[in-house]
Amino acid sequence: MAFESFNEFIAMGGHAPYVWAAWGMTGSLLVAVVLHARAERRLLLRNLRRRVRLEDRQGANRDEMAGISHQTGGNRHDT
Image (cartoon, rainbow, N blue to C red; front, side):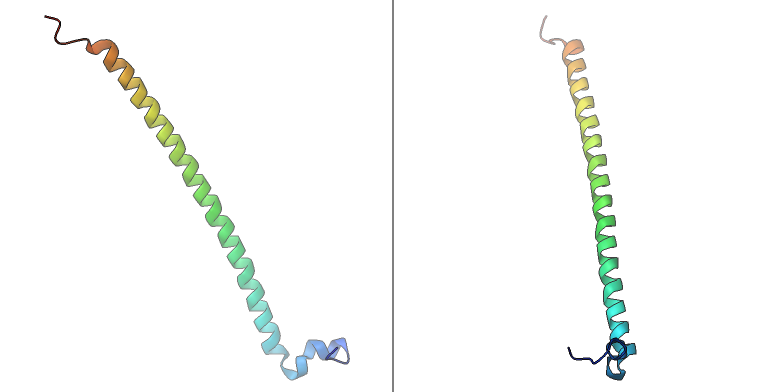
């Protein structure tokens, strides 16, 4: 092991503030990236579900309108 004791490891040869701050920032950024990715995924899935519901509703309305126009439209050339 490069250090004689745990206290020497924590002190990092006098460079502890820089070393531990770098580790802390790296860890914080990794956690932030993971949380952001999860939030983006949730938002994307919510928007996709909303889009599918909207398209299903529009498709049902289109089918309903097509059925009505065929039922009431009749043939104009019946004269």
